[in-house]
Image 1 (cartoon, rainbow, N blue to C red):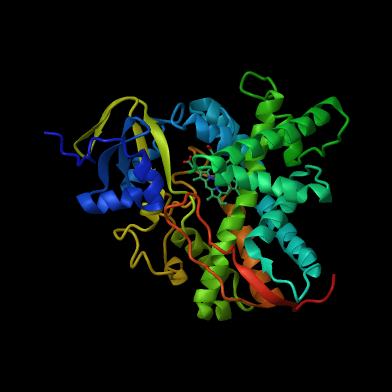
Image 2 (cartoon, protein in one colour):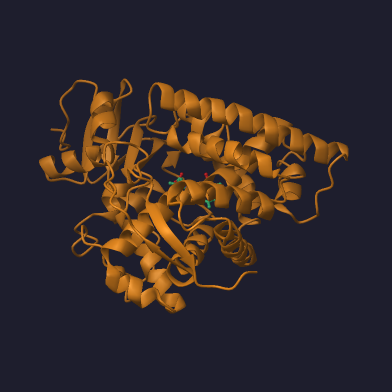
Length: 419
Ligand code: HEM
């Protein structure tokens, strides 16, 4: 007898779209399990959650990424045949390129640029005009990402480029117009970045040695060849786009500040550790990446269940970050929980799990954390603002989600001197 609970035999793609972040945990709760089988996108899928599941999922002997990501997601979010779809030596070699751009000094430089850009942009805000934090953050981070990567960006381009980066991310759980906006944003961005790579390689644009633009332009594959220009563009976009995506966590962090005034107080001239705890809890508590898929490399049995070669497996990321077996009161926002917590590669997985140097875990977590910390510092210590009545709810069925209003701030006053 097969010990695994199964969803009804119908295809559940529509339910996944409708139930969003909670699709997997609804079923885990119903079946009282961390492992069940469903059917989506016309195929059987094994769904897993929890720390042991994360450890299993990030074992490269057992899983591969080739053919695990639907083309529609590659054509909007990731780019076709990019790092997310690679395996083995070729993946690790490509990963080194990314890790070489995400050293502690890059995190610090990005944090510095982020703070400076928020302050500069805030100089242009008028007290009488409310702003939408999510929209401002996208534009700020687009400028920061390009400046750090040394990708030329004209001031007249900022809005369009920021919206295109956002459209790619916004497409991931979408069908219809939102999906097509993502594809259009990707096409336009690939053309733009590809032309910059071309200019670098032909000498009409000077790239500073050591800059991210230079590193990607001159990265060599294991066979010694340069990436083709389109692939180089796709991978450089895989660095720029997620920096802009931090805007989502920033708008959630602003809600957390509003709803937890004691943290607003603590962060006033707060310690680095306090900022860190707050930001970690924002990344755990609020929904962003829902799940991740991989394929079974060769058949094996785990907890009495057969994982057949080629089977698609979904790891429940949101559910693992809210798993009552791993987190005390998982549905309470409590940054203090990060004070005494020991680091583990397998239970806190807002950006994937395992060792980022050995598998697919996001290499940009340090950047995300530093950019969020400095933005919190700006919001708490550099400005005063009012929060007008608005809808700050967010839907768990839309993937990706964000606060409805984008977080409106009014009567903003600067507490710092003009630069
Ligand atoms: C991979 C989430 C920020 C670059 C990933 C993965 C997730 C993720 C879920 C997939 C993990 C896996 O396949 O197992 C996020 C979230 C972010 C964020 C929620 C917050 C905005 C960043 C930043 C960068 C970045 C700031 C770079 C500057 C990448 C790259 C990969 C990746 C290159 C592919 C890694 C690989 O396949 O080996 N991210 N990320 N991400 N992320 Fe992030």
